[in-house]
Amino acid sequence: MKIHALCEGSYSVDATKKFIPFNPEIDNYRDRPASLFIHVNPFLVETADELIVLDTGLGYKDTRDELNIHQHIMNAGYNPDEVTLVLMTHLHYDHSGGLVVERNGKLQPSFPKARHVIQKQEWETAMAGKSSSYHKEIFEALNGKVELEFVEGTGMLQPGIRYELSGGHSPFHQVFWLESEGEKCFFGGDELPEPEQLIRKFIAKYDYDGRKAMQLREEYGKIAAEEGWTCLFYHAKSLPVGKVSYFDDHFKVDPA
Image (cartoon, rainbow, N blue to C red; front, side, top):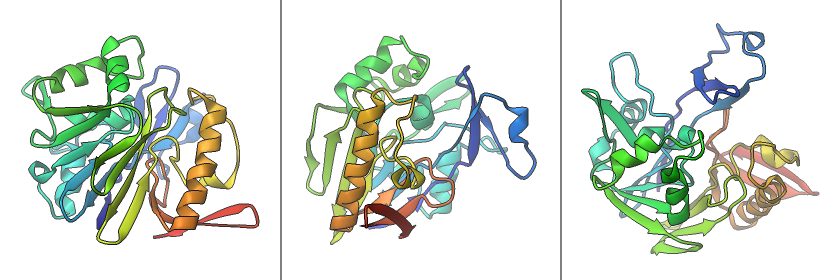
């Protein structure tokens, strides 16, 4: 198993839910009051049978009009058209923007040859268009253009890939457990978004069920420590891929 963090940088987001690039070397936190600062890391995982994208970032482009996630995949030595599987924890914009790319004024699927795995009720929620956390036009551009596989609850997608309905960050959020050739990794999306959230217990206002999300972070952290899972942290600032250890009621995360 080969794991690549497709780091897309840092952003500030305020009540308008617009994501604005933030460079700590030149930008000042004080200039963006009442903002949440986040880091975005989609992942590319090569297993014995699949080339997998785990969540897709914001869908922003670089100065050459190239989709960031496409460029990062090419930098890792792959062609975006080689991606066979896109696994989505949920469809909030900061995780789903890279599902599509704008070409000649139209949105097109970013991974047209890949199977896209989404919780059925998460898709229905996104398509309802009732929350600004979802950008309905993204999913309309996918519909009928790519292979969509809707799953429900918890189950085995195929040998080596298990999905679990978690429902802490959003009602139909899911997490993924991947195993290949004796190696295994866990992708918790926004249920376990950064290493720091293992170290301190708190209830986050941005979670649908903050108490449940807090409990899930601890549960997943303990499983990862006890069973040796590599954890992929989507919103990590500096350690997107890590190994978790747990002793004396404390977590520690080291580079994988």
